[in-house]
Image (tube, rainbow, N blue to C red):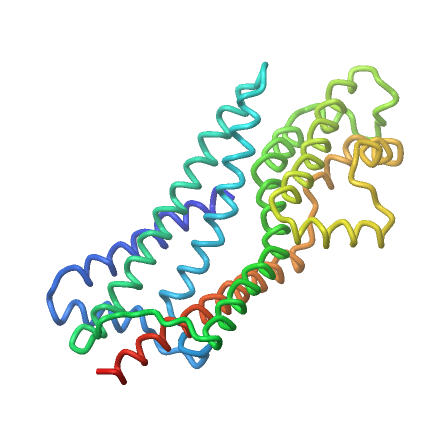
Length: 299
């Protein structure tokens, strides 16, 4: 995740900022260059919405903002508990940083997108009046429905983000410790000098379980679908499931799989969330596009 945020900070934000400055320059050539960059050729069109750099970056930053906001809420709740550990306070700093980076990127790209539209429509932009006809209400309903569908993959992405933030760092530290080699093949029930190591592994397992519950709490549709999936697999997401893991596996084996995830499913959810958000954008742009077209005909 550190690599991801490094790339995001030094790629997504500066590039959007440069485009925004070009559009604000009021220099025809620079504004034209920025407009062409924002409207990079794309063969895919959804209604009045043509997929381009601005749309894709806005959708991506919007999804990231939702997920990081959820992480901030969880981190703040952890630090408010009595006896909060130092790592909880440290983690709050990082998740809040990620949240504000996401907000900044979203603001920059939305502003750049809007400035490019204003630049392109500047010579003939009519007075805007929104007239909600029944057909427009259907488009609004479609947009809302698409956002609700996006809640399903967002639940999975939010869960994975929590795992990367709260479980994976602890796993890496434990695997790098000398006890990881000494306690290889030891079960939690055996005790001895590996008892502390096994307790730390159990803490990570419980943290993973807490991540599951946290993500499901934030996403209603995602929670329902996940619960149905658990029922189909006959799996209970509670402390008894964690205890069963330690009965069947050694502490080292539990540690190896404590942040295990299906990368193919994660990638699919990321694509699905992006498509759902883009469909919502397309539906809402259909409403706004019809309104502008109506104004043009009335003039």
